[in-house]
Image (tube, rainbow, N blue to C red; front, side, top):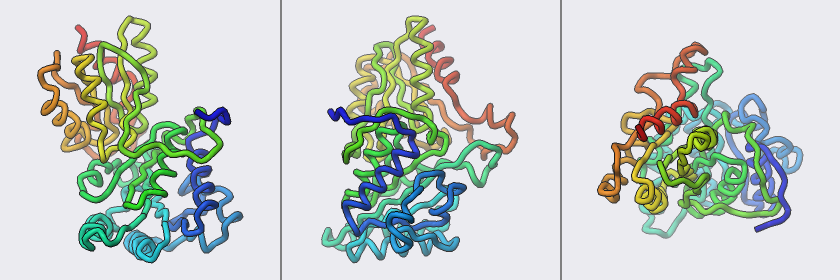
Length: 328
């Protein structure tokens, strides 16, 4: 383990990973809408144009389909694009490129070609942005074969998973959430990777397993601290990668605790929480002492009202209430 650590914010970790990869490999470049603007991408591309110029930080017109198509084509001639979509919602315009072209290239060419593309898609939620600017569609993308999907929930993982995604020979969807940009933790200064497809146990516990995704990971950790005062010890698992999912780590924890709460940042219906629940039922049903509890968005579009947003989005209190209910 490195001794050269600093405390970095999540957004700073993304920036550092991008800088490092662009310095190490001249084939790495960024393309996307608003990639020069803090209003679009926060500070995650700060200083990159000054360092690498406009040929490696390409701010495009508003055409998601063309942006992704350009990146895919570039990858097929040896470049390594980071394609940035500052609002996940509008990736729907690029779905033909993603769900018909990018995910199938390696298969359709019989393994003779790869498309080392990083699709960096940002979730913007809250702030009264309403239904068309607040959607978390990670389950939709994870449904597609041929695409890896990572969702870091800490600054350490934000850097390490982005480096791993950029260096991967296959398409990787890197999903970051603006609600996480201000969180901080210890991040090594040197170049490192976090393995894609490996979960992280964030807190140890014997009473309940909590699998939390994205912004709900720090919420679950906060819940664990409060519950510990009452003698309830939950084991918080951060999948980090949605696809491929580290089912082994989840199953091992459920076998130990016998109880499972899944806290997902997307809709409950037909989402990641349902997939994890199904896999646990298939592989560890006999170890369950209680039914699985799922915490996720209700099956409605995101509201605009701040008052309604406070009810709509899950928080640590939902995890606390679910945990206490499981043990009564």
